[in-house]
Image 1 (tube, rainbow, N blue to C red):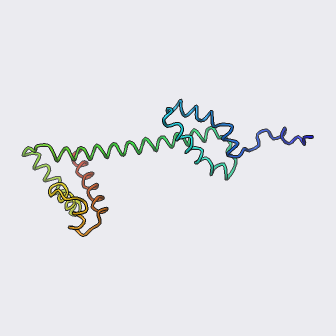
Image 2 (image 1 turned 90 degrees about the vertical axis):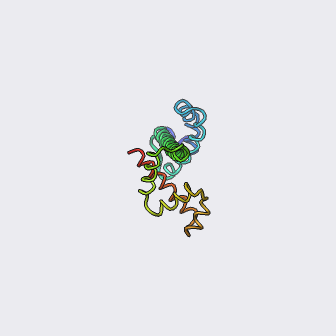
Amino acid sequence: MSDGLDELQPDAPLSLEGLYGRYAQWFRARLIRRYGAQDAEDLAQEAWLRMAPYQAKQAVRHPQALLLRIAANLMADRYAGRFRRDRHAREVSDMDGFAQEPASQIDVVLTRQLVLGLPQPLRDVFVLSRVSGLSNNQIAEQLGISPKTVEKRMTKAKAHCAAQLRL
């Protein structure tokens, strides 16, 4: 005999497993439509993992909306990461191409001004790398710094030069 509680509380909070059982197919279909099949599975898994702490604290009142928001945020993070990587790759290739092209007299003067405009620690690393052709380990030994510091300074030097070229 039923005590009637199930009838009085049809919207009782579901566990994460209950939410997954109820919304997993819907959520995956929505992700495929919005982001494509390639990203849908990864997004779904990550979204459910990120939803767990919310559900553990208290019952999520609008699980579908939360799942979609989490997925949208995850994709925004992915796009931003791709954009940063692509931009960095373009800057590096611009600098590599800049160093390999035959230089006119004006280019030589501009390059010299760019290099001289670098702060001394960045300039030392840049010149040893680009002019002397030393590896990061060789530069680190010569300057008495770590290879990681060489890498960081080289990245800053390239960014500084690229910013100056854009002006």
